[in-house]
Length: 80
Length: 408
Image (cartoon, rainbow over all chains, first blue to last red; front, side):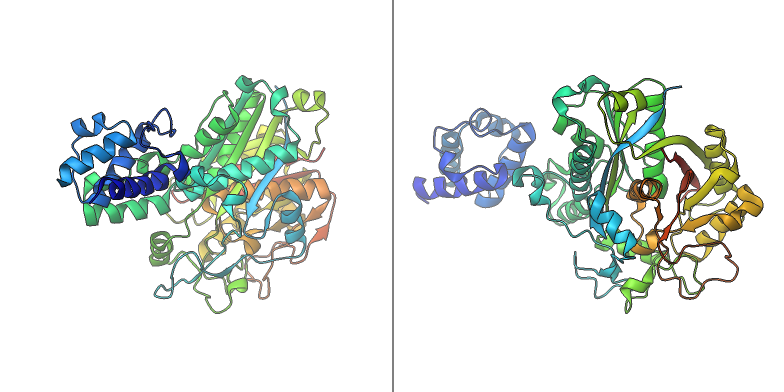
């Protein structure tokens, strides 16, 4: 899967879980500060990404995923 | 003692949304009972209910909605209706003096069922992080407080079918004792779900008159065979009298008395002679030092179950003696179905409207009155100026709550 494909899928999960407009979801966007997520939203978001990509993301790893770019890079690394 | 008046009505009911529509529907004797559309009920013995015809997106934004169980959505809509009806300007209120006390009989049943499925199929790690805050019963009051920034006491009453009345009575005390000047109080319920309909069904508590939905809720008739599940919310603005007068509010009625009791008898059956129910009614009268003869109307609990209606009639006779025959007694559940924790809320509104408009709402479907139940059940709406009116609510577990309102 290309980085662009991953980004598009991540974007769809974020738009659904955080109910934000897709155009606001840039690579630089931070979940909490820019996209309005609270602590429970971020848990749901990580669960959504796990489902979408068939991954398991540990709590320690999840804590480091703070931006859209973090998520795309993490998933790219995991999928190899 | 500080006096407490009703200044805002927020009914979200199966027969009408908003004070005027609800009032008109009662006068028209409208039934809100229909085949269930919320889920596929075709395999269940009970396939009818009184659903609320509302689009929550008209009141709440989409993002908000996804994180709210239906019982909280209904509470928020009813609170908004009540606040608007009261003409309260939020900017002029002291938020520290506004309380919230909207109860529910069950809580987030729909959310519970959906997440149980996730838990069983996919394991504990896949449960939504919003499951608990969506499901817990206190969230109706909590969300109303959050939405409007009300900082006064916020609490929750959970007494099954007595919830709404119990919450209003508790709110009365809050204002009387000086904890708050304004309280949004009442009940909310959203339990038209496969498990709830199935579960009340196996208890044989629900009517199975599936072929004639509008006739299914028929309190005080010989052919009554159980209640019809309803949903919705009833929220009232209760306000300290001087506070209401100062802002020139429209006062619908005064809430003058509250009586509570326990049957201490059985988990679901009422005391056969209505002992607890009678005690609660007598206490509501004593609370306001009103004699039984001063009461003109009772909005009955009247769920349309064989034992419940009988016990209530016996209880009324105990408290009112010969005056029982002169009382008007109606069950608006004949129209709305039984909204469980919200019933006391919407019925308090119906009672207040009866006093304010001078029209008693009917008991519809009274085609074959039970000869043993020989009170005046008001089969048609009736114009009458009544001084005092009671609203009765009795719960599973034998918890009883009765409100006494006075015309102003």
